[in-house]
Length: 319
Image 1 (cartoon, one colour):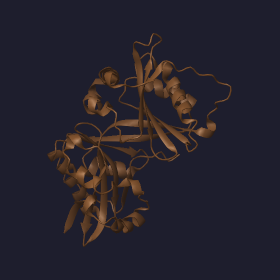
Image 2 (cartoon, one colour; image 1 turned 90 degrees about the vertical axis):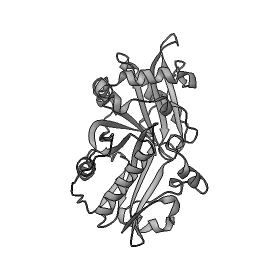
Image 3 (cartoon, rainbow, N blue to C red; image 1 turned 90 degrees about the horizontal axis):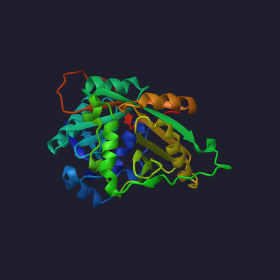
Image 4 (cartoon, rainbow, N blue to C red; image 1 turned 120 degrees about the horizontal axis):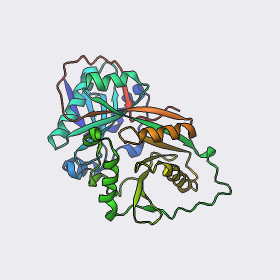
């Protein structure tokens, strides 16, 4: 019999066999410490802010793990799935349990960003779990060693940190730049744009020359001690300012001695994706494509879940 539990109620030492089989290593900071983990477990969906992890247990052994995090008022992102040997059935139960648990709390949409070259994972999300391949993400890798800061004097007076009063205008900019047929799935809420004091994210605005109109929005986020990601949205017909956003991010990170790589992300649900991609493909040769899978409601599908070994971590470019 398979039992599903929140990792809050599990001895973390029992995860070691799954770590070894899947070839991963859990960092100490990946699981919240007591009593924060218990408090967060008891919170309603609208108040959750940390990653939650669930495990499947059979014969007193952990044979599956799934991590999720709320990214919007009703949106949930799947960041990790690990399955042990011969645990396909338990894996399906685990995924369906977590999805149902969040649906019962008010969640409406689930999504995952999957490595575009991992055909097994793509098949798993599409065929076995009933997710739709709704968009793609192109990631460009910029290494610190390739950035030249010498003899350059930059003036970024037209870049400023985003403030609370800017949220409504930024929300309109981002959602207004999306394709209408994808807006319902990917549109940003005010909640998603509010500053999260528990995450290492910087949010900035690109202004026009008169400093009274927002042309672009970007967020710089720490992935780990040496890697950072950059996501942005820019108004159509102002794509020429995109390199300024990247240069600002590079300069901001240049004094960080641990910084090594910046991953710039382009999402295909923006209407100016093609123009930006053509420009970036010429400038940056080191790129990777991920697929974005979405499920807006739970669909019961009677499909064989036949993967003997499954390892899914949130897509990290294999440069």
